[in-house]
Amino acid sequence: MVAALKKSSPTRMRSCWFLFPMFNLKNIRALTCLFVAVCVWTSPSLADEQEFMEDFLKREYSLTKPYRGLGFSSSAQWDLMGTAMVTPDHVRLTPDLQSRQGAVWSRIPLLLRDWELKVHFKIHGLGRKNMNGDGMAIWLTRDRMQNGPVFGNMNQFTGLGIFMDTYLNADKTHDRTFPYVSVMLGNGTLSYQHEQDGRRTELGGCTSLVRNAIFDTFVLIRYSKNRLTLMVDAEGKQEWTNCADITGLRLPTGYFFGASSATGDLSDNHDLISMKLYQLTVERTPEEEKELEEEVIIPRVDNMEQFQVVIQEEGMSKVQIFFTLLFSIMGLGVLAVIGLVLYGRWTEKRRKRFY
Image (cartoon, rainbow, N blue to C red; front, side):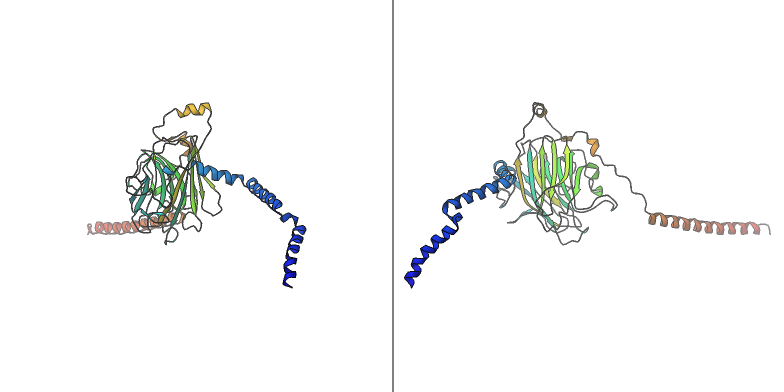
C-alpha cells in the first residue's frame, strides 16, 4: 500500500505539471520578468525620486537620526543652543514649559545655488487651541547662534525665515486661521512684528494644521532660478500642498541653515526630527548663466511692492459703539445736572444780595 502511494506521487506531480503548464520553470521566470517590468512601468516617478534622493542628498547640510553630527565636539557639523536637547527620536528645541528658547545651527555655510530642503517636525502639547505657543522657524541667514524674540532668533535678521506660527497675536477679525506657515526675507533692517503676526513683512503663506497633528508634518522649501517654492504636508496624504510661490527672490550664498523655537506665557513641545538638503541639477540658458555672474550681497525680492500687506486699523464694533454712546450720554447728563445745581446755587446767592 505504501509502495503504491509512493509510486503514485510522481505520477500525480507529472499530471499537475501537465494540467498547469504555466507553473513550469521557464514560465515562472517569464512571469517574474513581466511582473517586474509592469511595476517599473507603472511607478516611474517613485523610482526617479528615489534615485534623485540617493544621488543628490547633501549630508554635510543635513540633520538626521542618530544625530551624530550634532554636538559640541570640533568634528560636529551642527551646534545646539539654549534649551535644545538631543533624544533618540528627535531634537527637542523647546519643551512644553514657559519662557524657553532653543535652536540648532549648521556650522557649514551653504554654497549651493539650487537646492531643496525637506524638514520633518512635530509641534505638540497639552494646551488647548489658542492656549499654546509660540511656534518654530527654519532659517537660512547670514548670522547664526543668535538669541532673540523671533521664534528664538534675532530680529532684523539678514536672510530667509520660514515660520510655523501657532498662536494668533493679532485681532481675531483678521482673515486667516492658525497655525499659519509663512515666508519672510530679511535685509537687516526689516523687523518681524509679533503683534501683527508678521503680516507687514510676509511674502506668502498658508494655513496648515501642523500642531497636534495625528500624521507626520513636513515642510518643503525649494529654491531654484531665483524662485522660492514653499509646500507643506500635514494631512497624511503623502502629497505636497502649495503654500507660497515667490519669484524674483535673490539669496546670497554662504549663509547658514538653522531651526529655532520659543515659548512665552504659553508653551508647546517643538521637535525637529530631520532636515534633509538636496542639490538640484538645473539647466540654464546663456542669459540665466550671465545673470548668475551678478553677486548678491543683501537678500532682496524683485518688485517688493507686490508683497506688501496693507493692514487697516480695526474700527469699533457695534457693541463698543453702543456703550460709547451710552456712557457719553450719561456723562453729558451728569454734567447737565451738575450745571443746573451750580446755576441754582448761584441764582440763590444773587437773590440774597438784594435783601
